[in-house]
Length: 364
Ligand code: PBG
Image 1 (spheres, protein in one colour):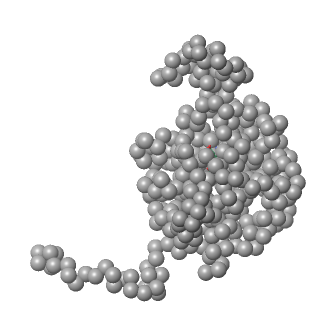
Image 2 (cartoon, protein in one colour):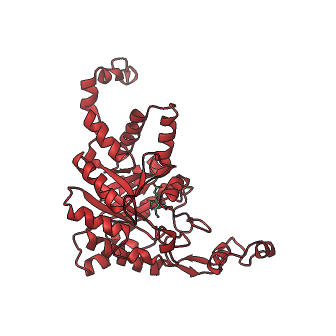
Image 3 (cartoon, protein in one colour):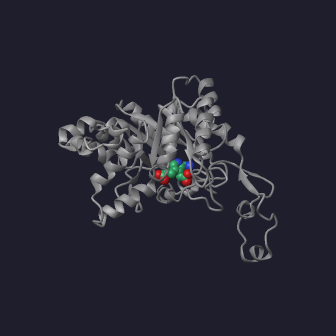
């Protein structure tokens, strides 16, 4: 009783006494092997278009992407995540350009494979970059949502005359056709695998996408390619800069009909992740990162597979903007967020800072 009450001999500062002692006890140590760099590629040659809302990031044509990746692979980067940016003229209702083997993603994959770079190729599997309406799959009519009136108001009728599909979507009559979309995701996955993708990452939050992709890959003989499922992806405001970068904002409505509601408890996230594991996900992901550390921690503990985290475009933009304004110091603040992710249980981190981190770590 007396010893319990008397804690005077305990000194927490003893283990903070010097650098060596602090390093010895660090729970996470950073290595470039644990970071994945997202990249945006688009059709063409010699394109290196800065993304204004993400200073330091670019839309690249495949030749330029190869140039950067050759250099980065030499500098210690071990993995990249590819997104396609699609010219408006190549977009349609179903996102058919995603199935063109000569699109920017497939071309870049082949260039990287032929160059025999020592780097893992991950591809994002979704349709929002490829559809004219900007939703993550093919659309289908549906009944009225439980809380929304079905009929358009007279005012909407008179003031707007958009294309039929758009008008219907505004009236809440259209939604993403889940099962048709996951079948198509399977085809997209096979196409990416043929072009050299090592890891396929479905990001559309369609139910049973993982199962459909696993089946399609196996049927095509790609049993060896892994699935990194965006199992836990919230309908977040922090994707704003990405939608500029990928030129993929939904033209009408939003993504709350398929992405998760951040007002719900982390239990839903655990359920999503476990479902994807059951369907064959080799790894799962939580996204965004910084505002979801509780979710990351719960999910990482619950799943028997590696759990990644995605520090998204808006998180990058915030850090960049504050650093560029001189309000925070970039390197220590960025690395602090990385330690937070690993502490919360992340196996690896997808971040627009990946190349920069590799450089910082090289400099010591
Ligand atoms: C595509 C996709 C998005 C992101 C990754 N894949 C955008 C979205 O869902 O709206 C966001 C990435 C980022 O913000 O960095 N579905």
